[in-house]
Amino acid sequence: MKRLFLEFVMSLGFSIIGFWFVFYSWYYFLKQGIELYFFGDKTSGLSGILLGIPLGGILGILLAQKLVYKTKGWNVFGTAMALILSIIGCLFGIYMMDEVGSYVIFLIPLLVAMMCLIGYHFKVLFR
Image 1: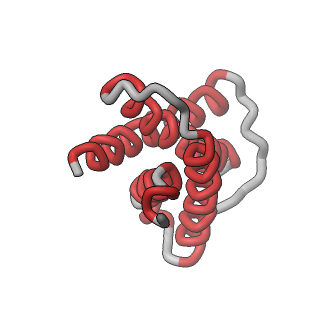
Image 2 (image 1 turned 90 degrees about the horizontal axis):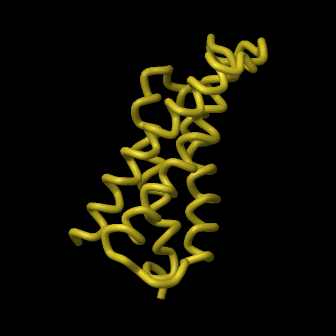
């Protein structure tokens, strides 16, 4: 249980770091935000949500596996499932932002971290 909690916390932390890294690197440094007005913001915010949060979440789980628990092999199936489920979680988060309001943006990293954890341990959960 401590292992799952540590992976969840690292996934959540790195998903937030991934969002801010993608958002600031694309929007402020490279100035590649397309003038597509979506939810009252430009697409740089969406690129941070759709790219930074899933990759950061998966990176957090992989760092917990490799650096803290020192596992030998790579869980390729789990990593692919975590990527697919985290992108689905991001799309669901964007849908929630559209239907409920933009204040649910704080729930998207929690949702994606949980989806990454479920995807990474998919084989264990459904044995």
